[in-house]
Image (tube, rainbow, N blue to C red; front, side):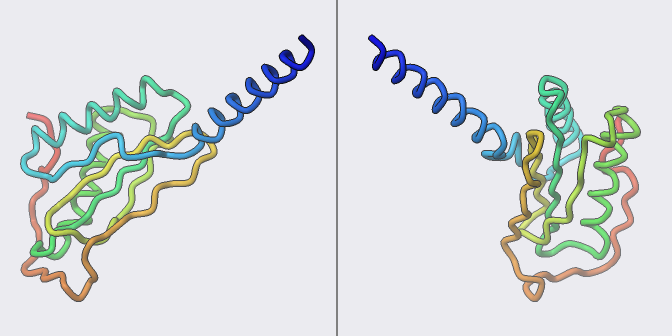
Length: 148
């Protein structure tokens, strides 16, 4: 009987420790998507805020990747406007959000991550080296994520 109790206690400690350790690791993005049009992007960003609201101890990490054949300033504009949309328009707590320039992929791509307390931020994973990116012209759009 005593050995059985010790085994149960050991199992409970092991399971508890395993749960604690996995909670500190971000296992994958909450969502990731190509930017195709404003309404779809805003809807997905709103869903991300819902996730963070349901997980009040988590932070949020937004990684934005530029397009292979984009324009100068386009990537930075997406990051700035996503920040404005989430913090200024949706009034989400800025201390819970981080924004990263992810480098470049074939198209504008956005990843949103939930970050458990104590966990490291996800590192960007660009698919293209800078030498393969062809930026032409200057990006001038001021309303990528504004609500109608």
